[in-house]
Amino acid sequence: MNNTEETTPPTDQQEIAPEQWIAFFEECFQSLADVTQLMVKLEKNDSELNSLLDPIFRKVHTIKGGLSLVPNSQELASILHSMESIFADFKDESAQIDFKNFDFFYFLLNHIQSHLHDLQNGVTFTELQLEEQKLIQFALLKIKLQSGSLANVKPFWHKQDLTQEDKFSKDGTFISNEKLENLEKLSNELIIVRNLFQMSLRDANIRSNAHAFDQFTQEFSQNLSKVTDQLQLQISDSLNIEFSQVAGRLPRLIRQTAASCGKEVSFEVFGFKTLVDRKLAQNLFDSLVHMVRNAIDHGIETPQEREELGKPPRGTLKVNLWESEGILKLKIKDDGEGIDVEKVKNKAIKSKLTTAEQADKLSKNEILKFIFHPGFSTKDNATSVSGRGVGLDVVDNFVKFYHGQIYIQSQTGTGTEIVLEIPPPRKVMVRKTILTQSNGLQFAFPLEAVESMESCHRLKITSIDHIRIVQLNDSSIPALSIDELKGKKLLMSEEEFRKKSLVIIKVMKRSLAIVVDHIDQQIEMVIRPFSPFLKKMKGFSGSAILGQDQIAYLVSTEELAEIMTSADEMHPHSNLPDNSQPKSRRAS
Image (cartoon, rainbow, N blue to C red; front, side, top):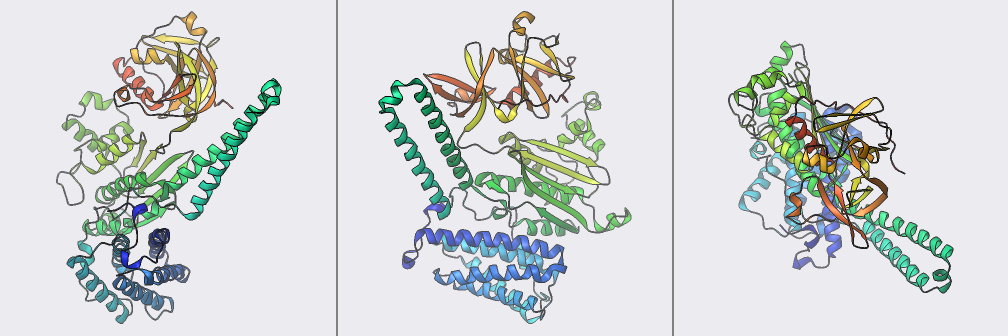
């Protein structure tokens, strides 16, 4: 499929400007995503019937009206007209909404989205697609004639494979005219700053007057920082989309999975208008699909089982997406039977992932994480939904790829909650950092990971084999230089240590103090990735040129924590507390 940004109208409709063509289809896709969310709300709360039907009706009508300028769109316009007519009947109460038909409506929205993608890219319809359109028109006619009912219509919409990706352009990026105008304004601002710099350098008064030169450089730095910050923000915003644009088939997937498992599931979604990086959004949805299917098949009980347990026959599944302190968080929660920890532990022992002796020493959370291991499943027999131990392995690989975290909480008989925390992908690696020096090299720590900074002069320290422990704010924290971490042994005496400084970082809910010679400053850097050869060096994620041919290496706090964990495993008797939380004293 062509990239969105390269898509142009078919040659017989060249009176439509390319930018208008792109904007129209992007607005259509957003409208369909909005309709899907409104349908979910309608299914949950029919008491708000009119307030929800009005925007659905308007958005369907708007899409239909815009298609009058699009070649070969008559069939889709006819379908939208029929759909619009049915919702008009729902509004004036001449027909009643049958909530058993929502599977069909969700299917219809996916069909419209797929049809729009084909029209956008000039794709010719297949015989199968044309046959599907005839079935849809017949179903819509039945709903119209039968006052909202789909009785006597064979449910052909159940045959679609919902595990397949939507026709969604992953590579193309649509940028609105407003965003382009903002980028142009920022470009003009950069030109003004550049011209001011060049003119000021030619000013003899500024060059000969030290005070005037210092004032000029300070103002220039402030102006440049202001423009570059805004430019970076605009570029990042242009690469994001609402998550709802890729999650349109989730309601159908939940309903269809529940039906195939013989279960009834009520679901709620929150935060799907959260802006997410385009590629990350699709990968995140793929993982969500696996977690939803797993929750329905493994977690939620059948209606009969739930009634015997004193629960409502219909299970509940909640999906919530939000951003907090720059971290994207996805939570999926069910009110099912929960995860049997003993069953997971026994299966892990049977699968030789651990020994019985080791398993007895593991925490509940550590045991639960076995469910993400490749090929792991507590089911004896695989079904069409789950049981092969593949789904949650996909989730685990996705989270690791983005250097994120997975948190699980489960209570037997109550349900399970899984939270994914994903740091934002950084295509343009502009990072705010704390710059330090150690052994003649310069190391930069991501500012968001830095908890505090300390002098080592009066700290209370203890050494256990290869680990140095410092006491900070009533907490014990390992304190090692980068060389000591990688060499897994102490390399400096206590007297040498007293002359150093500490950068305390927090990663994976654990504090770690890195010993450096001294701390220089807070600075914003443009980070360049390593070459394929250097990329294999664990502990660093890139480098930055500082000026005068000086290079700083960006520390990967996640990888430093992994190195520390492996060091602990080599010396299990040196158990370090992981609940230390030094008070934040971040650089200003």
